[in-house]
Length: 433
Image (cartoon, rainbow, N blue to C red; front, side):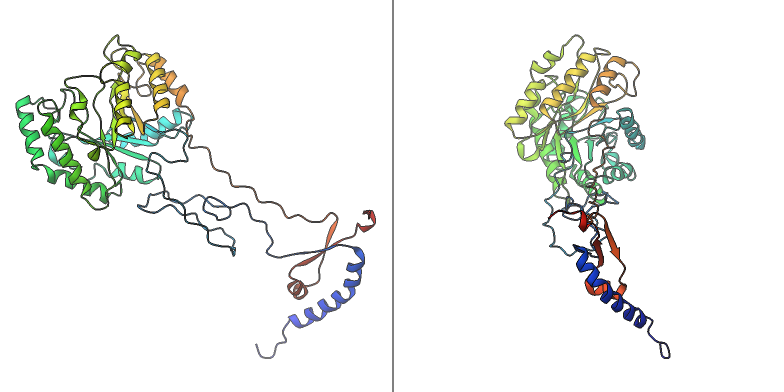
């Protein structure tokens, strides 16, 4: 401003005088180091090449894009890091040592609340699979009635390594005990396209909810007699209808669904291989595997016709991963040997995911009837891929400074001219040549 002398003029004069006096002393005293004002050391590069990356504030998945690492608080002039490779499909995240696992705990929002508690019971184990079922009573529910899927979608979007598994009935009145003749008629109508619109609505809702990578367990346990969507009355029509549903849902823009073909273990009413609709419309070969019938050992469950071994071999032949959407105790009571062997089986063959059916008589956490099996389950999975293991950044290296080094204040202008503060060692008499 007019009328005022710049205050830096006197400081500049004093700094020059100080420099003139001190330079001979500095030269005589020995080594001098210039410490740059911006010389704070940086830690090693993080996953995306930036220094000291901070955890992302939101882990919501973004289709066709890998997650980015927030910028460091420091401004660094460095080459741009190479682009990160695409993230693996959900449920197979390379950050985890083990395949994804979870439990069916409730069909509604309580299921998600209980997953957090189950994780705590397992010592912080990362329960990454959420599993629920669409009601099969009427078409409006099979379409994913408004608000039914909202909370599940929110849970899935909260972390990009989670897996949302949804059992989808193929026909309404799915547990009404309809006779074979009526089932046959319905399967043929489905194969002709009469029900396509319902599955198009479901697919659009899942995409709109931003869960386009949902695992769809379509027409599960089709080799039995429990459900209207069973295969036995007309396997040819059933396979054609499955293909029609998958084609309809895959035609919805933005979808990345995976379709899980899941029979019940064993022969049941019809060999499940007769219901297999083809590699082009199946992504996963699953199996619902409960400890039954009474008296059957685990080895027999493995070797029986259309049992556990057949599933693994069949999936390998067709180039598909395996899964266990439903499994647990049943006809043989509290059976720790079954629990131990089934967990070991899954560790060996590494299904894409598994979800224990956790209510009585099948479960081990919400069910008090199986304390011995519960102990085995907990001991095996406690701390697995624990959510409490933070990735620690490399601690920054402290600035190195010569021993017995003393900073010489020369004033702001001189330090700016030199590029930093002057540090002088006065221990030159202690050094040997």
